[in-house]
Image 1 (cartoon, helix red, strand yellow):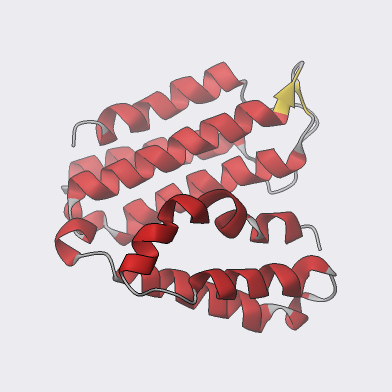
Image 2: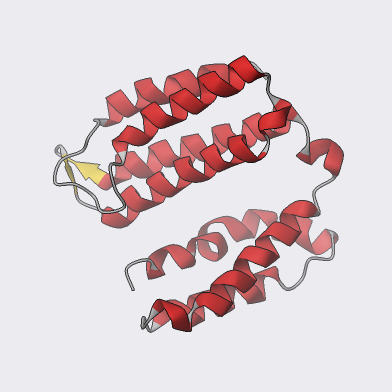
Length: 179
C-alpha cells in the first residue's frame, strides 16, 4: 500500500508536542486509535481491509479538534495561523524531496502535497471567517500553489522549483499574515 508511510505521520511526527494538552483535556484514546491505523496498514493489502481503522482515526482526530474551545477554533487569527503552519511544513517537506532538480524522496513530495491540501481544506471549512474578497484571493492562491503537485505521484522533474513554490506560497503567507 503506497500510502502506508503517511498513516504513521500523525502519531510519529505530530503527536508528541500535543500529547500533554490532549491528556489535560481527557483525550486519551487518540494515540491508540492512530496506532491501530498504523498497525492495520503496515502489512499492506487491499484498502477495504483498512477502511474501518482509517475512519476511526479520522473520527478521533475530528473529535479532538472539536475539543478546542470554540472561541479559539472559530477565530480567524487562529485558523490563519493553522494554515501558515501547514504551509511552512509543506515547504520544508517539498525542499527535502528535491535534490539536484529532481525528486529523490517521493514520500516527502506526497507529504508536502498533503499539507497544502489540508491547509486549503481548513480555509474552505472556515470560509465564513473571511470576507468574500479575501476568501477568493486565498482560494486562487491555493490553486496556484497546488500546481507544484500535478498528481500524488511525483513527476520526474518538479513542476516548480523550491524557489518558485516559495514565491507562490508568499501570496498565501502575506494574506494570511494580515490576521
